[in-house]
Image (cartoon, rainbow, N blue to C red):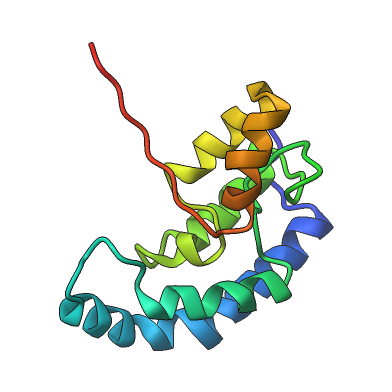
Length: 138
């Protein structure tokens, strides 16, 4: 198996590393403070919401969607080094709209959802306007 990065992945890695250096790592204390001070821990952390438009503008949004008109169209092998970089900070993937369970739910709705489900759920998930959940019973 060839694990060499393609030119496209190298470019995305460079942009992602620069974004992490400029926006994510310096804001780790801000995130921790905002989370600690939050009256409701289930509300979005402000710094994450502030950074999402910057990630979109940098072309670092929905990187996880393979073969998709909505994402970067990367294979899992191409996405893996980007996920590794985002995984260096526990909350970073959310800034790029690449966090679980949203990623798996978006992939499922995109592949199997009806047009109505895609409009109601996939569109706002892809835009980062809502979050999703996953539940399983026996």
